[in-house]
Image (cartoon, rainbow, N blue to C red):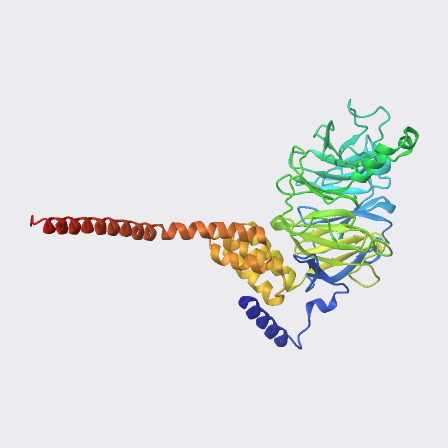
Length: 489
């Protein structure tokens, strides 16, 4: 607690010193927060503030119409999927239009898109477009030339009347294509580089509640026939990290795991070691406006094991670290710059975030504040194993907000990696992490026993030898006394 008071004093001094200076968060038309150990919303300095809004008109290509997706390619070009206009607008690193893709040549004829809903650009700068109403995935080269088309998949596990309606697409380093298709509840469809359907990954299991099981057991055959089937939820979006793990979101209001990280076998390996489930807001109203749980429509993998998920229900962004701790959440609905109407996609442009708003027909660029930058850098340094650097950055974060429990946890985890178990215990206590405190305590106890083992054994052996010597001397004195009484000495 003494440390907390010292940090609080430093924060007050920093606040007084900053009077008269422009506050980075003053421009944010929303509140940023996380959830503390008790599940209460804990206010934070804004991690990002709105910087600018980009519209089709400002780009000189006419208004966007129902834009549905956005992607930043490895060469830093930004691809905007303007679905209503059936075109793809490509921006250079200065956010100027470099080209507009509306058509391509297919078998010698001009071809185009029909209400496309998703796009992805591979490391080879190959463009994958989920051409939804045409029921196909179109793959174009960097120059806009047609490479191949994935359509009409054939497999014994697909029903004869199966209709392929691709919505979102992503690709791994082995050119395996992962497609979310409308009406497919078995999982994410997977294709190889020859357009062959390989199967599903990431099937969402459905488990009815106790009440639903009880109600069904008491129902008649006619009532059972009228009951709603327990059908798994569809995935809503996908992204892929540098290691080939697929991040997927599902709009499932009853699930505590709407975000999944799928390994090549399709198993969910997302870490959920934080205080609360990785599902956006954990406290919300049950009725009225802005009620109900978060509904994720997009996800973007960031550096340092972090990822940001876009909630379409309350138009907020939730950023987690690799262990499932909610670093911060911000956003909302409104007409001001920085709040949204119908956000549909989130992307990372350098150290900035960009959100595509289908309702406002624009892209809002967010730049990180000092708080957001420090949290991102500290998380990345810890993820990369640079714990001494991470400790310093987390300490700087605490100067901006002494109630940020994630910073205490971050320092504790870094100290634990540095084998400074005693100090780690102190920070885990401040961060309200009983589990990590127990780990540090066990290591510290073992460390103390190891350090004091030599001293302990020396004292023990000395005491034993002293006791033995005492008994020998005592025995000798007794024998002499007996001999003396017997007149033998």
